[in-house]
Length: 369
Picture 1 (cartoon, rainbow, N blue to C red):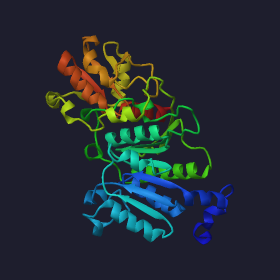
Picture 2: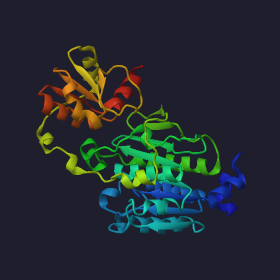
Picture 3: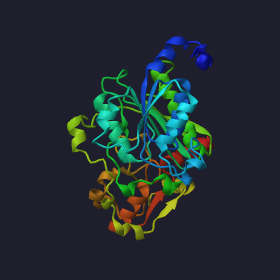
């Protein structure tokens, strides 16, 4: 055992105690795609004793550019089966628990309850909200990861040892988005190396949490932009308006994305997606009304919008908007497209969406400083 792990055991502050903690740890990885593959490989390599892996998908050719745990001969096989076999080939000392199905309300509480630490490596919002809520109720820490296009995020949620009311996913995004407010990797694309970077960061945070080394990314969301090679942190604070999450809350919540919420009429409405340079011109133009459709407690706080109406309340509040051109902004430029279409449909004014959202805006501003 010492030969296998000797390079980390000799590290200052690590030693046999940290290695024993790793060997006794029970970690669940939900999602064995672009994020889950590097998470598993590094946790297996470092010697985490029990690792659960959960995913219903089979390996397809489109997975191979970013899910490097798999290769062409694995096509058509269950991801968890192939991942487990390769984990055992890498380290025969660990145990891998296989869950070849999707997480849902019927299985989440029982399965998550078996583990000390949960790694959210999923790619859909329904699963992320369910994982979050069950972990909050069961007091389990989460290492969160997400990627889209050229950007990824990683943070630690629900670290009960830090706060009496620890920060979790709903403190940033209280309401699960509707299907028309989001885009998947199939729609937006993702550069193959990005989930490898973010997944490796998730594994690093998990190791820190298990061993007690360093400072975890708690209260801080780390964002990485592939195109600029920039990392930046967003500080997070608790949202007192978030309801108490318990078994009753979970039972009453619909975690499925309701595609029926989409308005078919919007698909035919053309709106202009503007770049940051155009948006900077709009900021100086008093005839253009700038509308922020993020939820009220999303960060960072800005002072250049004329109003903030959360996407979840926009339809009911459209009548409050002025009869003038409106430029809509959000975090990533996804919700703002739908919001602009909705505004144009109901108010018959010119509506614009900031492409890439505030992320693109702050990246350009920071590059020019």
